[in-house]
Length: 128
Image (cartoon, rainbow, N blue to C red; front, side, top):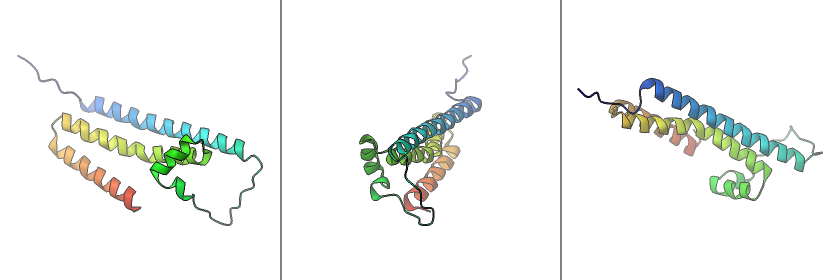
């Protein structure tokens, strides 16, 4: 008598998802911290004007341009990249859920996870 071995049980999947979220948040925090320290080192005596809102420059708003600025050593870009990693962490969790449920051949949860992923991507890409 052979027992079918499932690649993931619920407990293991929860543990992996928890580690994924924890790792994403820690990585994003480390990137923002390094970027913040580099920014403070480059601008030690700059005063901040809180009366006027100044948005991020255009090169920090698009992922491709942001990565070029990070590679060039722009500290503000590094901070922005850390924030992008923080936003990407729950999206990576949903992608993992889709893969894990597909491996379990659980079509209902694959469909639900794909719907959640579509809503997240729509909101991210359209600013909703």
